[in-house]
Length: 325
Image 1 (cartoon, helix red, strand yellow):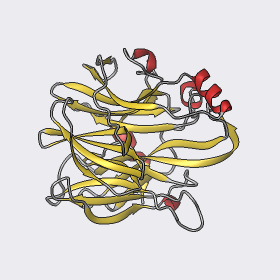
Image 2 (image 1 turned 90 degrees about the horizontal axis):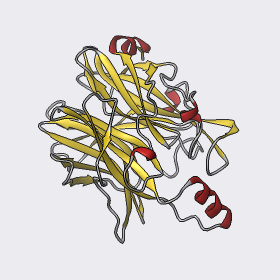
Image 3 (image 1 turned 180 degrees about the vertical axis):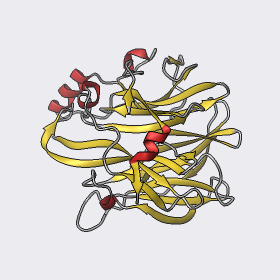
């Protein structure tokens, strides 16, 4: 992977309205341009955060989804106001968008915090101004990504359920699952894709990252992996010990519940200052992947839960990293 020399490609300073942390964006190509929906946590600076935590009065960020557009996928112009925000008596916020273009429309997957648990959602849009929510999971599920074409006549998504009792006495042994739908509303036929214990660089949980892309060898999909380290990592909160990395898996083209290849090392571990220092240091979380006609792959990722970044690679080199599984 080659990190963009312009990293971070998007941060709070680029947003013309209240913004503190800009990260975990979804990216797609739509109507002749690149479109990014990014998570914007706002309302508190680092100094205000630390003071509020010390006083025991921290009430959390406000969150909305901002929109940015680009002609080249590198230089971005942010819209004058947020694209989507949801808050009512039950819903606290929507965040972590993922974008898939399929059948002439854009499918948006998102996480939704509610007063009764975390729900995963699927919505559709054709203009990034109106969003129709098609489906909401029961708590707790997140990190949903929809494939860019039907498989066997059905829509398919990857997701990461969060069972409260977990497995083997661990509190965060979360895995990657797959579900199918005839209409984006009703999801079922759920089955395990990849267990966290199968990923050498994960010690707790894994999950889907950017929506998969079709390649001659199968579906190429990014994953996020988490390992707990003994040393305390940089963070605004303090007591942070989780390192997030980006990995790859290759899925069977006809049955994407079957993993046929896996990277044995992370393709993007946090090493740069903008990845190791921020709201939560040592965090890399891919949310968008674009396969160009040239064979270049653009991977967009949130860094340190603070800024949005870009790394590129050759498709052939990425496929070569997916060792037979």
